[in-house]
Length: 489
Image 1 (tube, rainbow, N blue to C red):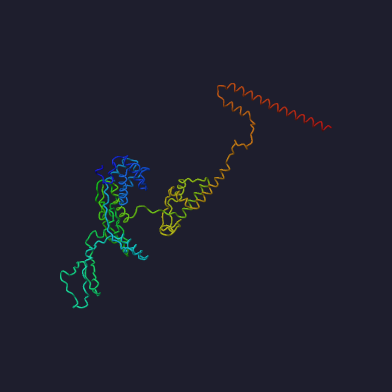
Image 2 (cartoon, rainbow, N blue to C red):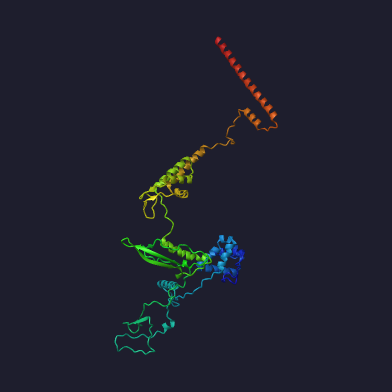
């Protein structure tokens, strides 16, 4: 593996999952800004490996494609599976670093030594330095030797007698792309030169040396107001990894437009070509086809539009109906059954037509709060209702009131704890019930003895009750006798 890599991973085993997992942890720490080799995961690398990984981070800053590969490699989801880890390691190992280009800049003008510049001059000097560092070298720069060996300027052409005839050796050769213009100045100034308007023949003259290869967006080529011709056959599928399909590099779309009288006229046929500004991708991996699919998505969406339908805005009448159904559920309990609520709502509005001009609960994309066309009442899911209802102030007030009522009900139904010391002791006035209950709870093995004891206890209770009744009758009779004696006296 070391002989096939690109040079950035020479000191690493790119075919061992454990080694790759450790390298991913070190790269993640370096991306987060850690540089101490005595702490964390950086303890597992030496100085040479650290230098190689820092070069990898530098390439990550230079190349967006390499950044995407490296970020996917150090992703914890990729590190968990050995197959994904080895796959991303192979892509990193086969990556070719971007060639570096040096850009020459003009040397800024500095004042002579020993002379301190003034405040205004210092500002101008800083501005020149900044502009010199930002401005690239022009495509056609004269040789410094030509500037120093500038020929003596011709005198003014005021009179024919004062003209000096130049020999072939002393004549100033003017390139074909430049035209000499006579000047009325004195002979101390050189003649002015007028550059021709012909473009430069150098194909790389207008190319930015700092530009990077990759996907470039395609500008719109259709005429404003034109639309694709309906019914034309256009391949809208995306490129899939596997066998190469060169037809994905080109998209041909026919456009048409209405004139002022409403007549449809064909405008032009536009041919979009991916390879015109982009490099040919590799079809063996889905990551390399990302730029191609992004370009196809941009062209197709710009021509035919997206397939996602617009959202159905909520009407004020829909809001009022939903709040009525919510109030009915709050009258029973302080919780809402959203699926039942959605079914009731949809059944009430099923098949009904909402007229144009009805009031919306918010301003739509048309900058108005009115419905702009007739529509059938949309079907609302319970998830959409559950997400929309808490945004309404009336719903939140209903929820708060239902919660308050539920708290009052819960507080009134609370039962005091009988084990508390403040509760009074309650005496058992029915001992016979306890005895009977004890008899029922015993097992069948001692049933006869328990039955006898229970019968004896019951007879004693009956006798005691009869004795009490006899005593009461005697007291009553004595009271009657005493009352008779009092009447006789």
